[in-house]
Amino acid sequence: MRDNAKGGALTEVTFYILLALHRPRHGYAVMQFVEEKTGGRLTLGAGTLYGALNALQEKGWIAPVGAADAGRKKEFAVTPLGREMAARELARLKELADTAEEILEEARNGEAIPLLLDAAGAPGPVAG
Image (cartoon, rainbow, N blue to C red; front, top):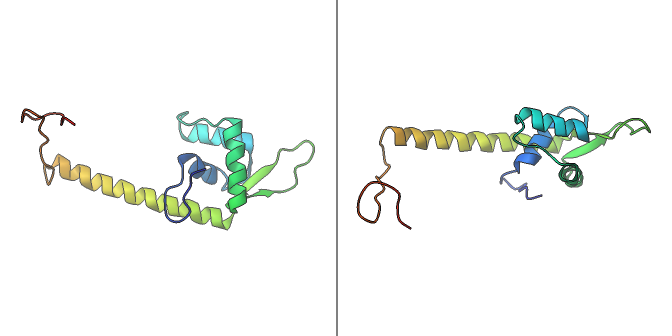
């Protein structure tokens, strides 16, 4: 997993798993949560999910809860550190969205956005 715990971005999958585990869930329920919350845009395969759960457990961001009985699936929940990481990611995403909105609003108003010219000097795609 390419998550950067030192202020960088979490992967989208990691972020959704942490959100899913704000209440205890087993793996299949996490898969359903992610698919439902993303409208089917993200679907997790078992290998991806269980690899991510193992990695998050090693980081101390999630932990197993209760005992996995013979008839019950193993459930996980986010830890205080995992909650902190999810909160940091939310703050990062809000900052990103605010910056993007500011730039796009400036562009709509024609502020500080130079007109891009093609090789012939006409407005259009820039030759590269």
